[in-house]
Image (cartoon, rainbow, N blue to C red; front, side, top):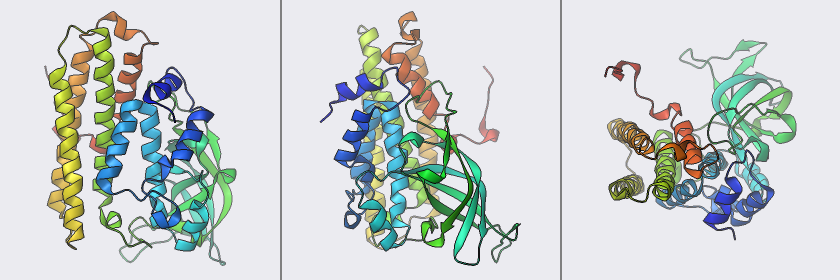
Length: 343
């Protein structure tokens, strides 16, 4: 059992997740919090899983980000045929991960297979994945296949790691050990059984009904709050004379609000009701505003820490870089029309 201190020591200044940490992750089943128990997962409820994600991000940014994204990809166990999911997830080290972008094509064959080609960016955890997930445009005879509304058909596919080439091109200032690399797939045949659609489920659980937008919003928010909690902990080490209590209380307040939202979402869905578009927009707007405020306050605190906080080998610098790398995720980026750079 690795302690928070052990994990932080192993992640400090490194660009890879150690074998010891990966063994711990698999032994504890941390990648399977969203995988149903019938497939060997932990089958966490939404609120329970968000608490875990917060704690991992608070331990270390790269640690929490990798677990969030890869556990999130393992959620797709719910979208694939039960016999395939059962086969894949009986292995304790199964780890999905990939890219949300549409980076390639899937040429439809005559035998219920697809020929996959393309390049996908930002696959977190790439060095540790057993399977890559990807989105591709369906083509036939080289031409895009359209749906009834004239839109290109997109499907998601699962590719074993042997058929993907990882490109270690992560050069960002933070999240250095998250292994967020690009990957390519060239002329790989994939059975239709190893494809899926986001909103089609083969399990029957409340978690299946949570709109993906809310799932993404809340899992990212607890990561930002967790990293912020770690940041202020390191800030206190450098400037113990400053009272950061209001920052800590704000993190606690917003974490409780996120968990309350998760609880309310599950309660609504348990009554066979839907989460309205207005409710989803309200949750998302809360996330946009929270990330803006949190980023501003972290930057304000950082400027009060002095030159020691700029030491690239310091813990506070690493956490600062991790936060602002994670905050570059486009999910909570405000509309271009809402930006005002005057001062």
